[in-house]
Image: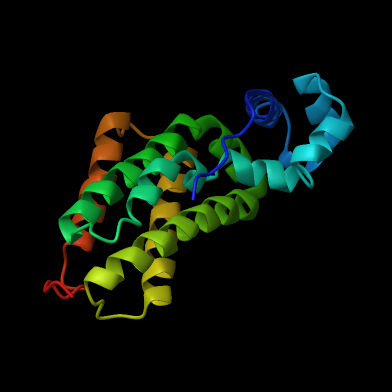
Length: 201
């Protein structure tokens, strides 16, 4: 089934709203930002805002919607003829996209962590967990997991979220490219570890 592409005007409006919230987060706490503030910053009216988002929380979730950013890779995982190696080749770029996106939004994450650590933690965790469920739902068709799928997704999403937020919120001299590379390497080791049985199903 073909997925209808989003209208370019809608895409631009959503991008403008995300950028507006991003700018505002660098100036004041999330709790003090209103929909009116976002609309003024993006130069759109409230009616337009509510056509696309239920509230500012919905917009914040969209800013960290890693599944949207990795839609192409996630779709390719659904190929019934894909081997385990094919799936791994799709997984790693997705993980790199997530890590890169968080590193690029480091300033926003740091600002929110200082004021609303629970909010930004939940947003990133839920987004990563959504991807993990999709990935392992496909991967476990090919390889049997030794552990409960929900437990695995909770563990990985929680761990990756903690690492990403710690990197963004704490000043350190960890180079961006090395950090992303190390996150991917650790995830690759986990995927190829003995949590999965390595015989094709």
